[in-house]
Length: 153
Image (cartoon, one colour):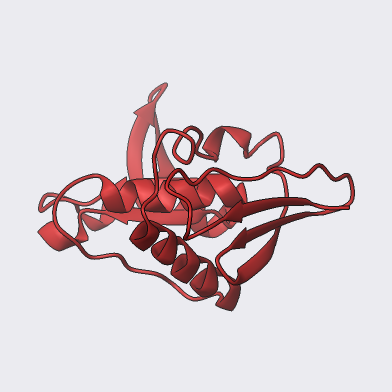
């Protein structure tokens, strides 16, 4: 018996169907399935919550979730381009919530520099320290990096 999240293109209000399991968890969106592992205690605060349950997902949204899962299974990067607004971010965060994946978020603007992306030097207790930023933390810990604002730069 496995716990399976089902996201269907046919439903108006698309909420996951939960079937309990102790051995393994499976997420199914459309025709694509993938195993889901619960987040560890150290990563739990980096997994988004309330993005999937608060939104009603129309069929195009579910198709995007399915496409995103295909890309994730292949280990490929994904890029969503669209009009200004929170839809793309909600889509990605809903997917990350369903899969239980931690993420790092980076808002890009015209003023974003390479040190904002990689490391910043900070002074703490009269000592200069280099603090890793979102892109470096995502690479080190294997988190998903969400870049927002690419269309503006």
